[in-house]
Length: 201
Ligand SMILES: Nc1nc2c(ncn2[C@@H]2O[C@H](COP(=O)(O)OP(=O)(O)OP(=O)(O)O)[C@@H](O)[C@H]2O)c(=O)[nH]1
Ligand SMILES: [Zn+2]
Image (cartoon, rainbow, N blue to C red; front, side):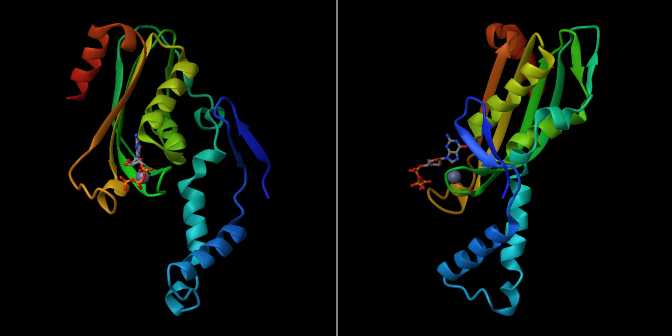
């Protein structure tokens, strides 16, 4: 069993290692409970596959910002807006444990530090690969960039389609949700925010 980790300010805790055997045993029971025969040929390896898939889908719990960003914070001059558009993500809603997915758009105005471009995708994935609501995903990405780079401002826009609203429940196939998080002058200055939003169009 893994070490228990407390996540600051969230009241969340989780184990640092995934116990694949125990998850697999639960998955087998799950298959029985939905009315399947987990011993039939096609399902023999399914509990193990399911455990491993879930280990991947929740790997963000076992990653930290320091670890994924490494040394890719660089000193830089200039204070023009940087926009990274269309970062795809897949996450799991915390209410139904069904997927939601879409795109993340990030903008920031550096003060003295810039970030390696690939790291925006890695930060997105670290938070997306946890149980989420879309609003919190937006805020966590923005806050992480804020803490890392101490920029003049940062804005994050997340678009998402939620399988729990498509495959079940309200069964709406064509709705999509946009959420955002704005910090610094992206929050305070309408002109900066508008410039960011116009670059997303
Ligand atoms: N705000 C927000 N809501 C979400 C997200 N993902 C799923 N939900 C919603 O969470 C809500 C949970 O509502 P409940 O009434 O407790 O659950 P439910 O009976 O399964 O609801 P229905 O989906 O309407 O059938 C639903 O309205 C979901 O659409 C998300 O990322 N953000
Ligand atoms: Zn849901």
